[in-house]
Length: 275
Image 1 (cartoon, one colour):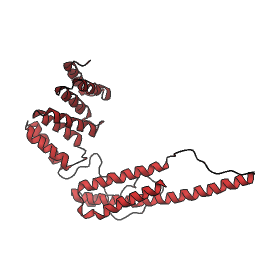
Image 2: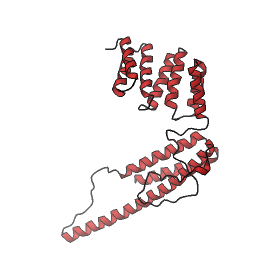
Image 3: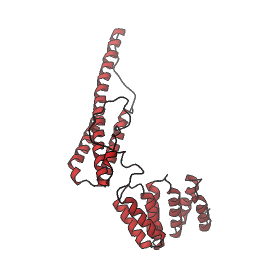
Image 4: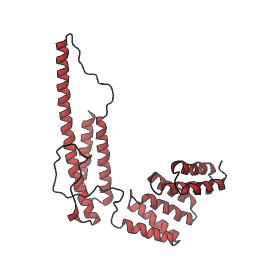
């Protein structure tokens, strides 16, 4: 059944983690946590029904039907216990492995190992499910919106400073390196927005538009999303793609009606002659 396939996938994925521990980088660990999260989400979908139940409760008499119902209940109870045990084993193993990954992540980032707490149970509260624990310390889940690698903020600030000073070439280069060094960074949307502005300063409007698009798609509901969408529409207008520019700029007020970017988008639409 599908649950067995998921168990096998999770086992293979976590076994691969153990083999590559010694060569792992920060990006590797973040990727492993993402893969593990996806597998757990797939496991949760096993609790969703796929069709109407069709138990065999036929019988020519009341007693035969009662016997059939009892047999079906016993079968379902046994199957439920087996699946529950499998899930408990996956949760226990996954929790322990996440604890190990988080411990190694703190070591890589130079965090305080003495301040670590207990790893949160994989998948959330299990309602009394017993989970085997290990003495491995843990930190809050990596990949949270505020988790930054060592040097990540410093590199971002250096690029921002270059942009503020009008050194567009240095800013564009630093921000491109930032994107390559910290894939999936919480600062990525803002970094792409600033990289687009740096490229605009260099006169490379086409690449700037791509950077603005990357910023918006990286977090379409984030704090810089309205500005990124406006900048994308304005760049498309400068590239002569008036229809696409008008559509994009019009989306600013639709998606972010309370944003400061709405008035700028309206002014740009008027300048482009959008109808």
